[in-house]
Length: 194
Image (tube, rainbow, N blue to C red; front, side):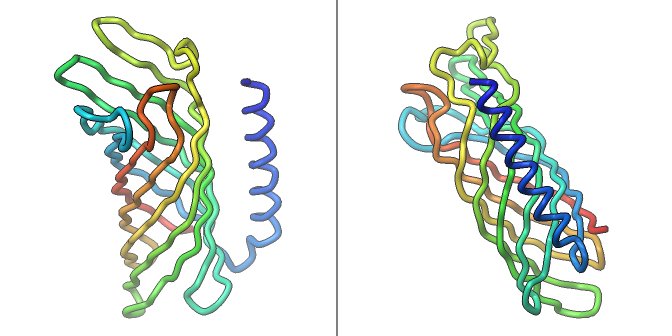
């Protein structure tokens, strides 16, 4: 399983690198990072609460028509949940590859509004499930599914090269059989374009 995940990551990075190398001229890299609020929605999620965490990414934007652009990147963050009533907590640290399209509208020479929409593919690299004073690593959870994919939406404001963005991610995969499905992430991040 780990060999397949590793090969998928290598292939995705090669495609992403080739795309970026072919299109770097005229584009911009954006380093973003900040707060993430994680949860799961769907079946078997009653009583679970938000789990605060982190998220950061290196993105590449390439304008293809006026303010319209496509975006690809590498993102590191988490997915998880907290159940205070049962003293349980699940947190997985993951690697994501997002691909979005968006539009940047210049309000003035210094200020702009930005919106984008697309999809992501993610792989959990590490993490644990804490319950009843015990920790289980995600690799030891029976039928644990490390991979996830879904949609993402970003809305932001630019001041020159500084970006403040809210990003919403919604995964569709189950974490494990009969476990929670539909990881939800709300991210508030600060970025800088270079």
